[in-house]
Image (tube, rainbow, N blue to C red):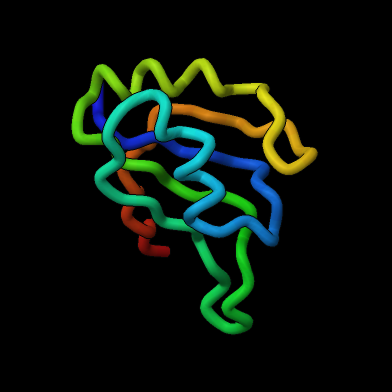
Amino acid sequence: MTNKIFVGNISYGAVASDLESAFAGFGEIQDIKIAKDRVTGKSRGFGFVTFTSADDAEKALTMDGKELDGRKIRVNVAREKQPASES
């Protein structure tokens, strides 16, 4: 398993410290990224949390379906970005 998780359905006003507060109890966090729209700079409603260990990331999967800022978040193992297919 990877040490990176996907966190979806987060509040559009959420910042990295919100995710850090929610996930710090599962282990040491290495990095947090919230996806932003390239044009507007606004949150796209999802992000990624990278832990220092895969075991900690696996424990964090228990947050799936829990509430954060009034929204039920989705938490899954992060998948590698697929290259764009050529037409």
